[in-house]
Length: 291
Image (cartoon, rainbow, N blue to C red; front, top):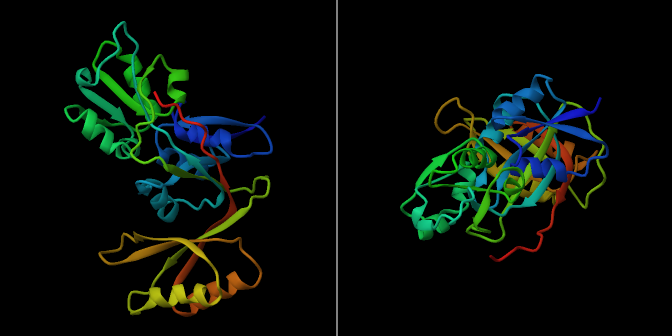
């Protein structure tokens, strides 16, 4: 029996597309869940072996529900990353006369999708009500189930292949270089091909009574010439001014430099937790349609 990968559902989400794009070495069945939290909980409770969730978007930044659950709620190593180009499309139910922008009264989608298209919505649909849903596919499903209402959804091209929907306008994201990082998480190792990029992600918690601790943490990596591609603070949830720092390191865990860096950071009184060391894949843009 094939192992299962949990994804944000229903079918037709960007997460489904990402899960199918990871270069996995064997067949896995996809199982949909209604929210990112449900995906991570299912993997944590061993209902499925692995999960794919969005972690960061190049326009809107981190997906906080993913990051906070990985930090606070579950012990799930990051096993791989896929950076995937994201194109958003405005879709409507088909009818004899396609809805004009002026006739659309409500636009529904996931908050990240709405945020990636703010300029388009402000210019073309300033009158339309915005309603957030758990996923882009849930929004598409909702619009297709109410074909007589003046509704539109924002989501991937895949939704028009799954649901009875048509494009009202394609490629409506505000910035062309729109990528989302998806991560594969799970308790057990998984077979993956090598990648040109390898990364390690760690969580560092600073001592509250140590002025300049963050500077000294970064210096630990700097003098070893270890490149950092991202650093982000997230609340520890213990009080104002108390933060975890999530750091992406541009190399895999090695036997010398990285353990030495972590030991030095711990000697400063900081806590270090490794969130994963993994291959990072990049999916290239396909040619966009202009209509």
